[in-house]
Image 1: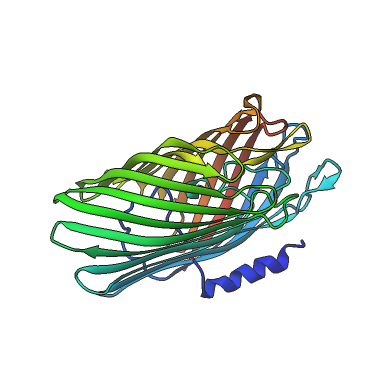
Image 2 (image 1 turned 90 degrees about the horizontal axis):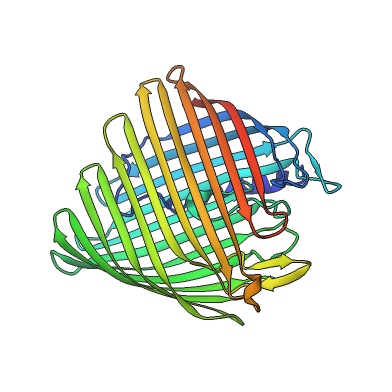
Length: 405
């Protein structure tokens, strides 16, 4: 239980911290304001491949207690949204992999804070922030492509701060700076640690009451640790945001990415990002996300005991989530993430590698009363990789109770 004090320290962040919106959240839609709500719960988890390896596949039971809060405060000028969760996953009988037991206790905690403030009818400031410490990948935030045996927990933080100004009735601009960091404090190496600074600027034209045409430029500077390399990216994009109805919006941005990495190849690759939110009716809603780009994290890999540095990983991220309310007391939800990627730009073309991850889940929620809710979830993950010992399949079943107040 050596991670106990790090769990407590993350709880302190509830006074300060930060959550970038999910990839599945279309950029100019918003949820309804929520009152302050606390949620305490506990899950029992059966995991048939705890260490995500086929070479030494082992199953185990885990316990997952957590406590969370969420609220939205709205004034005529300011909207503040806070969503936090403090939790752990505990394996009372932790499997032993390659002669070493995996961590029996790990974090599952996240805090998000978003702020929108209107200084005037023309000028608006938006801040979206997130910090998390967990071991399981969170695919909807684009943080991890998979769960590797020796990586342990990762800490992820993001802060995106943007000013928007409306110059005329139809024309406006947004300008901002984004900071993100990924840290793997207990990993065998620090090659996956990365800090990224981003400047972004977008022109926006209100073509019609439902349609906003966009064009933009984005600059990213990635600073790496260990044997990984620093990276530089420039993005030129055009796009469109279309509100099909009061409850349905689609956002698309496409263009070119100029990618370079220290000591590696420079290249230009297509860039695409698409998201959509829709509440079809009172019972059915869904979110979708697609992104294709060259990613710079995790480019240092090991092949036959040698460290290989790749120039880029061209990655497609496809995700779908949906929720169907069968009755006021019974809800079904589900989703999938599909993430194929190609590693290229090493010293020899024969070292090029591919891998893909498929993650799917289905969940049933039963509301027993205004206080108590039961949840049952099944999750399946399948990672197919050209890298040795990176293939795995994993099934997880979770049963839990949540109390809200």
